[in-house]
Picture 1 (tube, rainbow, N blue to C red):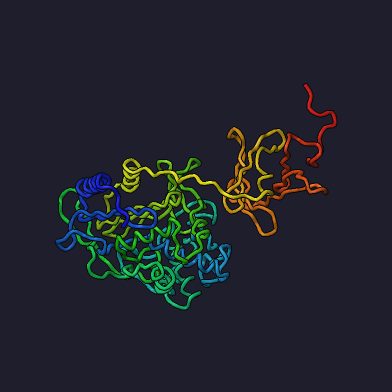
Picture 2 (cartoon, helix red, strand yellow):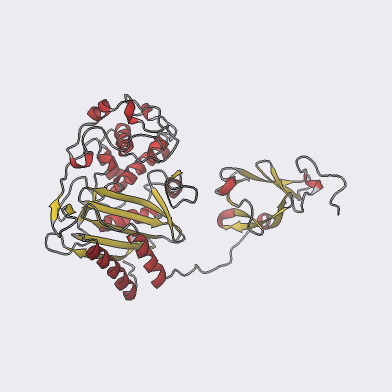
Length: 451
């Protein structure tokens, strides 16, 4: 453990103590990870008469979905599944065969939120064939791709996709391909001792009602797992980018990209591929919330500075939505991260030649070098399209973000080898505004600039 300072630990503990007392939670655990390690753990309340520790299991509900999504992305990276595949290609026989894998991962398939029949979270589950047989026209609530609409049913279908591709249950596939490589050996489909019992807390009295627990069977990929704080901390480290070979870090970054937002243009909450997203206090967090009868849990990670935060509680309701972001705010206030030390780097002469001002028409841009022969192109003055570019084997650069994401940047030289211009997907950047010698599309007026 790389521990936080004693003063930070006290402030973090006080925050969860207030939460446990004021929200009347039977028990609560929380943790902070930093730089790939558990930096702080705290708990309040009792589980079987003792304070819960890092080995105490809680149900993590829909956090299960992000682990199922990880196996789906492994299948994609292996070429066995395409995100644009209709689910019917892999799970035939459903009335929603046309919705895509990507739409299911991002909750944009338009499917109903819950499975047919009784409330699946509180009643024994059914086999997947029986579940599929109950689906009908009412399964679709919105046109696929139109909007965000959270669907537990969609992840039941993705779990079946995993099972059919791997030839084992979805849970066994997740265990073998995700949990075991990450060392998450205490994440299981059913509880093991020591574990918390799920309770509902009476709204008007300090008494408890035990909640039911069962195997959700076909719906299990939507929320079956139990986990410990130690295991969920490792999951936060994974989400922050330390993937241990389970996925390429670039694939996890793809999962963290917003596919849809659920709260308007100036978004705070959204969804990627199997991951929930939120923006709070200048941070962009990825992770997932989880709830099942008797349990609440959430894990968030910020890959930009390799921190993560989580909580688990054994109550059907009551935990503040801001608990984790407030824990991160405490960490920022008590132990603000130091910027990395600047160090000089080496750069080839051909790259140094590219740096400096460039002009798209009359608009001024600055080109800077990035590590690994990368480039950044940013408007001077702040207004305009900015992107980073990664060097490619063919001598071009591939846009990584912004307007030019996925577009190619090429350096064009004259016959004598001197630098002429940059060609960015037909946009020509020249060393001087509208350089007539650089082949600007549409030509440059022969009269030149005038008053």
